[in-house]
Length: 211
Image (cartoon, rainbow, N blue to C red):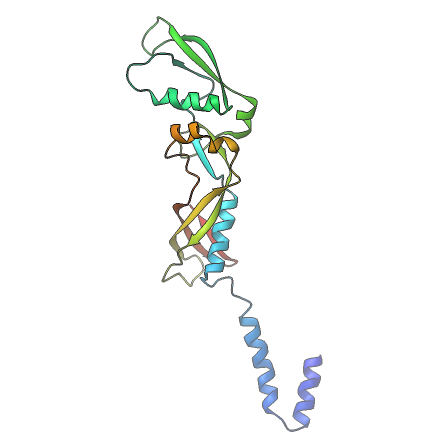
């Protein structure tokens, strides 16, 4: 109602130029509000951060597809399963007891170790899709470090484009920094800056990121 009164006053004063400029400025102001769809670093980074908030920082596989599990005390050649399992024991995620072990296809038991989940381990244990369905230990969050803005992003809703970025693990539990864990689970357990990628999709509400 105020806009109509002002327009009438301007018309009566003979200054008709302002009757055109006033609605024009309003139109420009409204068009600037729809900036979520622009492929700016701010908008694309916000989409990637929102996706990272839904994920864990990093995960490592347990030495067996399920818990608890058994391993022989002696093995022929290098057995990385023992190194990883014992590192998890020292980190407090698994408990180890001596017990019998039967090799597949045999019936005679040999000395072995029985590995089971500890109370601390239960806080971080989960089954993660993409890791062969194995039980894994996960923790921390990923923080966006830098984002590559695509040169020719889509401008229509539903358009998709891949993008690359770097991120690092933050708020990692203490066991992830244990030297024994770092050695046994290299390169899985890397907390520094890493390269990553996602797919960005333009929606009616702005940008979204998916794996």
